[in-house]
Image 1 (cartoon, rainbow, N blue to C red):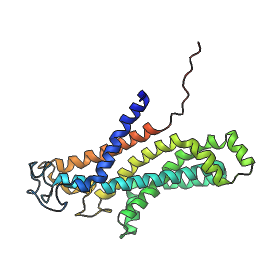
Image 2: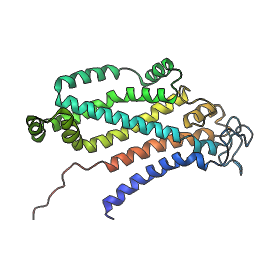
Image 3: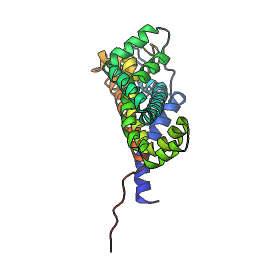
Length: 271
């Protein structure tokens, strides 16, 4: 194993472990998520390693069970935002008139504050639940991502081999999917990491505002909101999900950056 491969593995492994733990967490939980096992805000003990929450439910159980939906929602949002921005950015770079229109629309949508956008979508779609939150996160994420994707795609679209393919009669979809996007792998992986962090923030914010998952569901953001009044009695009920959200966002972002291809040229020593 080369040093570079080892360094990449070290940066990717925490994200893989944390995501796998969040996905498998509901099956690893020692108690039922809604079963009281201690007194309200009970101290850590044998039956509850991290103590109890405001209803005496096991904090560890709810911590293990509360990350899966956040991880899946954030991955879905990051994938949809990155994919949509990549296609729109590449298409706009190849068709400048369309590109200018996309950028103007993106500029307008970027003026909408994230929290206000979540509230507008979720409150206008009261039965949407987590699907409404995902839709809001995608709509709010694409304008930022498409700007970055369009900037990265512009020099590729102006390169000789793309112009030669266009002159040869290749269709737009072929130019986008076969000529431009394969050369944006590093940018798109970095963009995916950034949008995942933003998606975690938006989905967690929606959970904190209770416009997504509703009690008694196990959710990290809900845990922070529900137990904030008892943080002095059992800090783990708030600190544990806060740390989990931060580690999730940080580890996935580092993993995406580590997996991005290195586009820089290596220096050559002339003997």
